[in-house]
Amino acid sequence: MITEPLARHRVSELNRGGARIFDAAAEGGVLLDSTGSRPELVMVPADEWYRLRSLTEAAWIVAAAVADGEAMLRGEKVEPRLAWLRLVPHDDLRDFLDDLGAAADLARDLENPEPVRQTLHRWRSTVEYILAGAPASKPVDWDEVVALPRPEGDAAAD
Image (cartoon, rainbow, N blue to C red; front, side, top):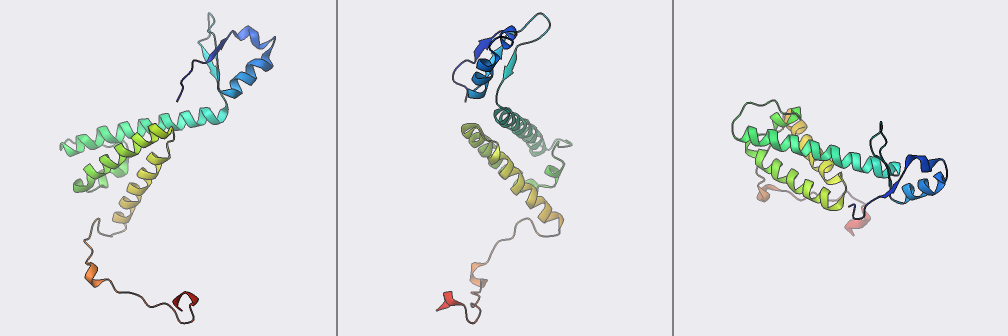
């Protein structure tokens, strides 16, 4: 999370002391003042830029999925921006939105898009499972679960 303002420099300073500015950019970023024809520019390490871009992309995906999912729950005809979302069973759609919301909160707090990616992957995998012909949900009768014997000669069985 950005807590301090970026150091501000003029673009002309890059010519006389550019190494100092580049070092400051590598430490966390610098802001280059605007000129008559150029907006303010931010210089940050590439890893930080990619991380911020990934967070922004995750936020857009979450916003689109939530807007489309809520409309679907209300019975509106929508063409979801995540095409596979239309295959999530209606009964499971609220669970998907709740899971995605929790993942978005975690991604924001951690400043890492991975929780959103993992949640989307799990739900998309569920849709692929359904497309393969498997039932979306099937209650498990734990009384029918059978213990499998270990293979003969397995050292862990001794």
